[in-house]
Figure 1: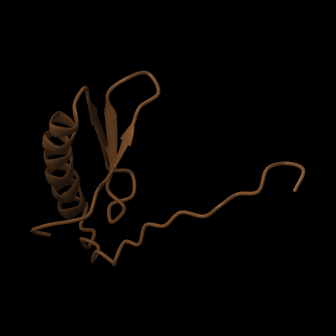
Figure 2 (figure 1 turned 180 degrees about the vertical axis):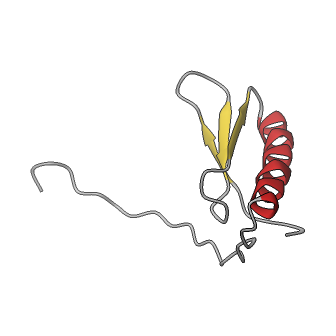
Length: 76
């Protein structure tokens, strides 16, 4: 998996956290976006290593689509 999509979120308590949609359970965090991306690279490597050690297949990444929808307020 030479490159994969990640989603970066701003954490309520400060800093950022990152998830990897192609690897359920693979997350990381840091105080800066750059730090979070660096940490998630390490998390991805460790996750892939663990999958291999467990004899599990490395999942193929699917296209990640991001969208926004308007949500009506409670009385609409």
